[in-house]
Amino acid sequence: MKPFPSFIIKESKHILRDRRTMLILFGMPVVLMLLFGFAITNDVKNVRTVVVTSNWDSEAQQHIDRLAVSDYFVIVSTVPTPQKAEQLIRSQQADLGIVFSKEHQLQFIVDASDPNMAQQWTVYAQAILAQPAGGKSSMLPSQNGKRLGVRLLYNPQQKSAYNFVPAIMGMLLLLICAMMTSISIVREKERGTMEVLLVSPVRPLMIIVAKAVPYFVFALFILVIILLMSAFVLGVPLQGSLFWIMGVSLIYILLALSLGLLISSIAKTQLVALLVSAMVLLLPTVMLSGMLSPVESMPPVLQYISAIVPPRYYISAMRKLMIMGVGIESVLTEVAVLTGMTVLLLTVALAKFKTRLE
Image (cartoon, rainbow, N blue to C red; front, side, top):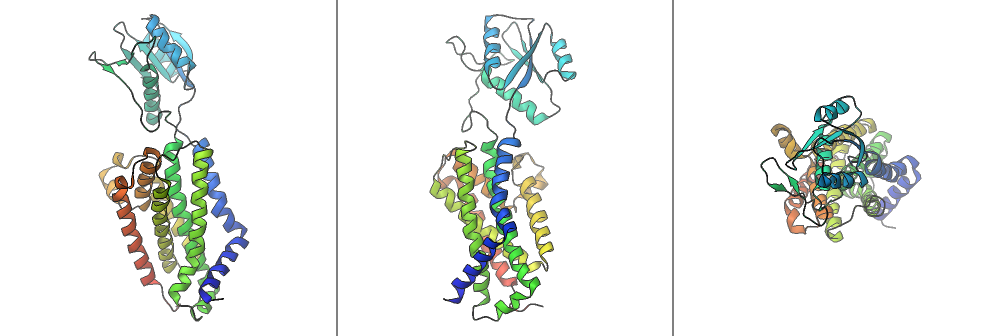
Protein backbone atom coordinates (compact mmCIF):
# COMPACT_ATOMS: atom_id res chain seq x y z
CA MET A 1 0.00 0.00 0.00
CA LYS A 2 1.25 3.51 -0.79
CA PRO A 3 2.45 5.54 2.22
CA PHE A 4 -0.03 8.43 1.89
CA PRO A 5 -3.23 6.30 1.92
CA SER A 6 -1.77 4.21 4.72
CA PHE A 7 -1.30 7.34 6.84
CA ILE A 8 -4.95 8.28 6.28
CA ILE A 9 -6.13 4.78 7.22
CA LYS A 10 -3.89 4.79 10.28
CA GLU A 11 -5.29 8.13 11.49
CA SER A 12 -8.86 7.03 10.79
CA LYS A 13 -8.41 3.83 12.81
CA HIS A 14 -6.92 5.82 15.67
CA ILE A 15 -9.94 8.14 15.72
CA LEU A 16 -12.41 5.25 15.58
CA ARG A 17 -10.66 3.43 18.46
CA ASP A 18 -10.71 6.49 20.72
CA ARG A 19 -14.13 6.59 22.40
CA ARG A 20 -13.60 10.10 23.75
CA THR A 21 -12.83 11.43 20.29
CA MET A 22 -15.88 9.73 18.82
CA LEU A 23 -18.02 11.13 21.64
CA ILE A 24 -16.82 14.65 20.88
CA LEU A 25 -17.22 14.22 17.15
CA PHE A 26 -20.73 12.80 17.14
CA GLY A 27 -22.10 13.13 20.67
CA MET A 28 -21.52 16.84 21.11
CA PRO A 29 -23.30 17.90 17.88
CA VAL A 30 -26.40 15.88 18.75
CA VAL A 31 -26.54 17.15 22.34
CA LEU A 32 -26.01 20.80 21.35
CA MET A 33 -28.58 20.60 18.58
CA LEU A 34 -31.17 19.23 21.01
CA LEU A 35 -30.27 21.78 23.67
CA PHE A 36 -30.42 24.80 21.38
CA GLY A 37 -33.41 23.42 19.54
CA PHE A 38 -35.60 22.62 22.54
CA ALA A 39 -34.12 23.70 25.88
CA ILE A 40 -32.40 26.98 24.99
CA THR A 41 -35.19 28.78 23.18
CA ASN A 42 -36.66 32.24 22.80
CA ASP A 43 -40.01 30.92 21.66
CA VAL A 44 -43.04 32.64 23.16
CA LYS A 45 -45.23 30.28 25.20
CA ASN A 46 -47.79 30.68 27.99
CA VAL A 47 -47.38 34.45 28.44
CA ARG A 48 -49.54 35.46 31.39
CA THR A 49 -51.84 38.17 30.04
CA VAL A 50 -54.16 40.56 31.86
CA VAL A 51 -56.91 42.43 29.96
CA VAL A 52 -58.27 45.85 30.89
CA THR A 53 -62.08 45.86 30.46
CA SER A 54 -62.77 49.58 30.90
CA ASN A 55 -63.67 49.92 27.22
CA TRP A 56 -65.15 46.63 26.11
CA ASP A 57 -67.06 45.70 22.98
CA SER A 58 -67.58 42.73 20.67
CA GLU A 59 -64.49 43.51 18.59
CA ALA A 60 -62.29 43.58 21.68
CA GLN A 61 -63.84 40.28 22.79
CA GLN A 62 -62.93 38.68 19.44
CA HIS A 63 -59.35 39.88 19.79
CA ILE A 64 -59.05 38.45 23.29
CA ASP A 65 -60.61 35.15 22.19
CA ARG A 66 -57.91 34.78 19.53
CA LEU A 67 -55.22 35.43 22.11
CA ALA A 68 -56.75 32.91 24.51
CA VAL A 69 -56.94 30.06 21.97
CA SER A 70 -53.36 30.56 20.80
CA ASP A 71 -50.45 28.59 22.23
CA TYR A 72 -48.63 31.78 23.17
CA PHE A 73 -50.87 33.63 25.65
CA VAL A 74 -52.87 32.69 28.74
CA ILE A 75 -55.49 35.13 29.99
CA VAL A 76 -54.97 35.13 33.74
CA SER A 77 -57.20 38.04 34.75
CA THR A 78 -59.43 40.92 33.65
CA VAL A 79 -59.21 44.24 35.50
CA PRO A 80 -61.12 47.53 35.20
CA THR A 81 -58.19 49.96 34.92
CA PRO A 82 -54.64 50.06 33.49
CA GLN A 83 -53.34 50.78 36.99
CA LYS A 84 -54.67 47.42 38.21
CA ALA A 85 -52.98 45.67 35.28
CA GLU A 86 -49.69 47.37 36.11
CA GLN A 87 -49.99 46.25 39.72
CA LEU A 88 -50.41 42.63 38.63
CA ILE A 89 -47.34 42.87 36.42
CA ARG A 90 -45.26 44.51 39.15
CA SER A 91 -46.31 41.77 41.59
CA GLN A 92 -45.15 39.10 39.08
CA GLN A 93 -48.67 37.76 38.58
CA ALA A 94 -48.75 38.70 34.89
CA ASP A 95 -46.31 39.42 32.09
CA LEU A 96 -48.36 41.44 29.63
CA GLY A 97 -51.31 43.82 29.89
CA ILE A 98 -53.57 44.82 26.99
CA VAL A 99 -55.70 47.96 27.14
CA PHE A 100 -58.44 48.63 24.55
CA SER A 101 -59.39 52.30 24.15
CA LYS A 102 -62.67 53.76 22.94
CA GLU A 103 -61.01 54.67 19.62
CA HIS A 104 -60.08 50.99 19.14
CA GLN A 105 -56.47 51.78 19.83
CA LEU A 106 -54.25 49.44 21.82
CA GLN A 107 -51.82 49.91 24.64
CA PHE A 108 -49.43 47.21 25.80
CA ILE A 109 -48.11 47.15 29.36
CA VAL A 110 -45.13 44.81 29.37
CA ASP A 111 -42.71 43.43 31.93
CA ALA A 112 -39.47 44.57 30.29
CA SER A 113 -37.04 43.16 32.84
CA ASP A 114 -36.00 40.94 29.92
CA PRO A 115 -36.15 43.41 27.00
CA ASN A 116 -35.72 40.77 24.31
CA MET A 117 -38.64 38.69 25.56
CA ALA A 118 -40.75 41.83 26.10
CA GLN A 119 -40.26 42.72 22.46
CA GLN A 120 -41.11 39.16 21.44
CA TRP A 121 -44.34 39.18 23.47
CA THR A 122 -45.41 42.45 21.89
CA VAL A 123 -44.66 41.27 18.37
CA TYR A 124 -46.55 38.01 18.89
CA ALA A 125 -49.56 39.82 20.35
CA GLN A 126 -49.56 42.30 17.47
CA ALA A 127 -49.40 39.49 14.94
CA ILE A 128 -52.39 37.70 16.48
CA LEU A 129 -54.47 40.84 16.93
CA ALA A 130 -53.76 41.87 13.34
CA GLN A 131 -55.51 38.80 11.95
CA PRO A 132 -58.96 39.30 10.35
CA ALA A 133 -61.89 39.12 12.75
CA GLY A 134 -65.43 38.37 11.60
CA GLY A 135 -64.48 38.38 7.95
CA LYS A 136 -63.18 41.96 8.09
CA SER A 137 -59.63 43.17 7.85
CA SER A 138 -58.73 44.02 11.42
CA MET A 139 -55.26 45.47 11.58
CA LEU A 140 -53.70 47.14 14.57
CA PRO A 141 -54.59 50.83 14.91
CA SER A 142 -51.71 53.16 15.70
CA GLN A 143 -51.77 56.35 17.72
CA ASN A 144 -51.97 58.55 14.63
CA GLY A 145 -55.11 56.77 13.45
CA LYS A 146 -53.51 54.70 10.67
CA ARG A 147 -53.90 50.95 10.53
CA LEU A 148 -50.85 48.77 10.94
CA GLY A 149 -50.48 45.26 9.57
CA VAL A 150 -47.96 42.63 10.63
CA ARG A 151 -46.59 40.17 8.09
CA LEU A 152 -43.87 37.73 9.10
CA LEU A 153 -41.64 36.35 6.35
CA TYR A 154 -39.51 33.18 6.33
CA ASN A 155 -40.37 32.25 9.93
CA PRO A 156 -44.06 33.06 10.53
CA GLN A 157 -44.18 30.96 13.70
CA GLN A 158 -41.05 32.73 14.99
CA LYS A 159 -39.33 29.52 16.08
CA SER A 160 -35.96 30.17 17.67
CA ALA A 161 -34.60 26.99 16.04
CA TYR A 162 -34.63 28.85 12.72
CA ASN A 163 -32.03 31.18 14.21
CA PHE A 164 -30.02 28.67 16.23
CA VAL A 165 -29.53 25.88 13.66
CA PRO A 166 -27.26 27.89 11.28
CA ALA A 167 -25.45 29.31 14.32
CA ILE A 168 -24.86 25.85 15.81
CA MET A 169 -23.57 24.64 12.45
CA GLY A 170 -21.01 27.45 12.41
CA MET A 171 -19.90 26.85 15.97
CA LEU A 172 -19.72 23.04 15.82
CA LEU A 173 -17.88 22.73 12.53
CA LEU A 174 -15.30 25.31 13.58
CA LEU A 175 -14.70 23.92 17.05
CA ILE A 176 -14.62 20.24 16.11
CA CYS A 177 -12.44 20.59 13.02
CA ALA A 178 -10.01 23.11 14.49
CA MET A 179 -9.81 21.57 17.96
CA MET A 180 -9.54 17.92 16.95
CA THR A 181 -7.04 18.58 14.15
CA SER A 182 -4.77 20.70 16.35
CA ILE A 183 -4.87 18.23 19.25
CA SER A 184 -4.16 15.29 16.92
CA ILE A 185 -0.99 16.87 15.52
CA VAL A 186 0.24 18.22 18.86
CA ARG A 187 -0.27 14.75 20.40
CA GLU A 188 2.21 13.35 17.87
CA LYS A 189 4.70 16.03 18.94
CA GLU A 190 4.26 15.28 22.63
CA ARG A 191 4.72 11.56 22.18
CA GLY A 192 7.75 12.01 19.93
CA THR A 193 6.13 10.10 17.07
CA MET A 194 6.14 13.16 14.81
CA GLU A 195 9.90 12.80 14.34
CA VAL A 196 9.37 9.24 13.16
CA LEU A 197 6.75 10.41 10.70
CA LEU A 198 8.94 13.21 9.40
CA VAL A 199 11.82 10.87 8.56
CA SER A 200 9.46 8.57 6.64
CA PRO A 201 9.41 8.63 2.82
CA VAL A 202 6.25 10.72 2.87
CA ARG A 203 6.74 14.46 2.49
CA PRO A 204 5.88 16.58 5.58
CA LEU A 205 3.09 18.31 3.69
CA MET A 206 1.47 14.96 2.91
CA ILE A 207 1.68 13.99 6.59
CA ILE A 208 -0.27 17.07 7.57
CA VAL A 209 -2.83 16.49 4.83
CA ALA A 210 -3.19 12.86 5.89
CA LYS A 211 -3.88 13.98 9.47
CA ALA A 212 -6.57 16.40 8.28
CA VAL A 213 -8.37 14.18 5.76
CA PRO A 214 -10.17 11.94 8.31
CA TYR A 215 -11.47 14.98 10.18
CA PHE A 216 -12.65 16.46 6.90
CA VAL A 217 -14.64 13.28 6.20
CA PHE A 218 -16.04 13.17 9.74
CA ALA A 219 -17.00 16.85 9.46
CA LEU A 220 -19.06 15.98 6.39
CA PHE A 221 -20.87 13.27 8.37
CA ILE A 222 -21.50 15.77 11.17
CA LEU A 223 -22.87 18.28 8.67
CA VAL A 224 -25.27 15.68 7.27
CA ILE A 225 -26.40 14.76 10.81
CA ILE A 226 -27.05 18.42 11.64
CA LEU A 227 -29.05 18.98 8.46
CA LEU A 228 -31.13 15.83 9.05
CA MET A 229 -31.81 16.80 12.66
CA SER A 230 -32.76 20.33 11.70
CA ALA A 231 -35.23 19.11 9.09
CA PHE A 232 -36.79 16.09 10.81
CA VAL A 233 -36.32 16.78 14.54
CA LEU A 234 -36.38 20.57 14.90
CA GLY A 235 -38.67 21.23 11.95
CA VAL A 236 -36.36 23.75 10.26
CA PRO A 237 -36.90 23.48 6.49
CA LEU A 238 -34.07 23.71 3.98
CA GLN A 239 -35.51 26.36 1.69
CA GLY A 240 -32.40 26.84 -0.44
CA SER A 241 -30.32 24.63 -2.68
CA LEU A 242 -28.77 21.71 -0.83
CA PHE A 243 -25.91 21.79 -3.34
CA TRP A 244 -24.92 25.34 -2.39
CA ILE A 245 -25.45 24.67 1.32
CA MET A 246 -22.98 21.79 1.09
CA GLY A 247 -20.62 23.79 -1.13
CA VAL A 248 -20.34 26.75 1.23
CA SER A 249 -20.02 24.34 4.16
CA LEU A 250 -17.09 22.58 2.48
CA ILE A 251 -15.25 25.89 2.20
CA TYR A 252 -15.94 26.56 5.87
CA ILE A 253 -14.73 23.09 6.91
CA LEU A 254 -11.48 23.67 5.01
CA LEU A 255 -11.14 26.99 6.81
CA ALA A 256 -11.63 25.29 10.19
CA LEU A 257 -9.07 22.61 9.36
CA SER A 258 -6.60 25.29 8.29
CA LEU A 259 -7.14 27.07 11.58
CA GLY A 260 -6.50 23.80 13.41
CA LEU A 261 -3.23 23.34 11.52
CA LEU A 262 -2.21 26.86 12.47
CA ILE A 263 -2.96 26.24 16.14
CA SER A 264 -0.96 22.99 16.05
CA SER A 265 2.07 24.85 14.70
CA ILE A 266 1.94 27.25 17.65
CA ALA A 267 0.90 25.03 20.56
CA LYS A 268 3.49 22.87 22.28
CA THR A 269 1.15 20.66 24.30
CA GLN A 270 -2.32 19.22 23.90
CA LEU A 271 -3.56 21.31 26.82
CA VAL A 272 -2.42 24.52 25.15
CA ALA A 273 -4.00 23.43 21.88
CA LEU A 274 -7.28 22.66 23.70
CA LEU A 275 -7.29 25.98 25.54
CA VAL A 276 -6.50 27.98 22.43
CA SER A 277 -9.18 26.15 20.44
CA ALA A 278 -11.80 26.51 23.16
CA MET A 279 -11.08 30.03 24.41
CA VAL A 280 -9.92 31.80 21.27
CA LEU A 281 -12.57 30.19 19.04
CA LEU A 282 -15.55 29.56 21.32
CA LEU A 283 -15.98 32.98 22.91
CA PRO A 284 -15.71 35.03 19.69
CA THR A 285 -18.01 32.57 17.93
CA VAL A 286 -20.71 32.86 20.58
CA MET A 287 -20.40 36.59 21.26
CA LEU A 288 -19.31 38.20 17.98
CA SER A 289 -20.64 36.03 15.15
CA GLY A 290 -24.28 37.09 15.36
CA MET A 291 -25.18 33.79 16.98
CA LEU A 292 -26.98 35.32 19.98
CA SER A 293 -27.40 38.95 18.97
CA PRO A 294 -27.26 40.80 15.63
CA VAL A 295 -23.87 42.17 14.66
CA GLU A 296 -25.58 45.43 13.68
CA SER A 297 -26.68 45.93 17.31
CA MET A 298 -23.12 45.75 18.66
CA PRO A 299 -20.95 48.81 19.38
CA PRO A 300 -18.88 49.92 16.36
CA VAL A 301 -15.63 48.64 17.92
CA LEU A 302 -17.03 45.13 18.34
CA GLN A 303 -18.46 45.21 14.82
CA TYR A 304 -14.97 45.84 13.47
CA ILE A 305 -13.56 43.02 15.59
CA SER A 306 -16.31 40.65 14.45
CA ALA A 307 -15.20 41.22 10.86
CA ILE A 308 -12.30 38.80 11.45
CA VAL A 309 -14.50 36.10 13.03
CA PRO A 310 -15.11 33.43 10.33
CA PRO A 311 -18.41 32.06 11.76
CA ARG A 312 -20.00 35.48 11.24
CA TYR A 313 -19.92 35.01 7.47
CA TYR A 314 -20.82 31.32 7.50
CA ILE A 315 -23.80 31.82 9.81
CA SER A 316 -25.00 34.71 7.66
CA ALA A 317 -24.68 32.62 4.51
CA MET A 318 -26.48 29.63 6.03
CA ARG A 319 -29.36 31.77 7.25
CA LYS A 320 -29.81 33.15 3.77
CA LEU A 321 -29.48 29.79 2.01
CA MET A 322 -31.40 27.61 4.49
CA ILE A 323 -34.07 29.92 5.88
CA MET A 324 -34.58 32.55 3.18
CA GLY A 325 -34.01 30.18 0.27
CA VAL A 326 -31.98 32.65 -1.79
CA GLY A 327 -29.54 31.72 -4.53
CA ILE A 328 -25.77 31.65 -4.35
CA GLU A 329 -25.59 35.14 -5.87
CA SER A 330 -26.95 36.56 -2.60
CA VAL A 331 -24.09 35.13 -0.52
CA LEU A 332 -21.16 35.83 -2.83
CA THR A 333 -19.68 38.32 -0.35
CA GLU A 334 -19.70 35.75 2.45
CA VAL A 335 -18.26 33.06 0.17
CA ALA A 336 -15.49 35.38 -1.03
CA VAL A 337 -14.52 36.29 2.54
CA LEU A 338 -14.52 32.65 3.70
CA THR A 339 -12.44 31.61 0.68
CA GLY A 340 -9.93 34.39 1.30
CA MET A 341 -9.64 33.47 4.97
CA THR A 342 -9.13 29.80 4.07
CA VAL A 343 -6.31 30.57 1.64
CA LEU A 344 -4.63 32.93 4.11
CA LEU A 345 -4.86 30.58 7.10
CA LEU A 346 -3.72 27.55 5.10
CA THR A 347 -0.76 29.45 3.68
CA VAL A 348 0.35 30.70 7.09
CA ALA A 349 -0.17 27.29 8.72
CA LEU A 350 1.91 25.45 6.14
CA ALA A 351 4.61 28.14 6.24
CA LYS A 352 4.93 27.76 10.02
CA PHE A 353 5.03 23.98 9.97
CA LYS A 354 8.57 22.91 10.72
CA THR A 355 10.08 19.79 9.30
CA ARG A 356 12.33 19.53 12.32
CA LEU A 357 11.04 19.61 15.88
CA GLU A 358 12.96 21.69 18.34
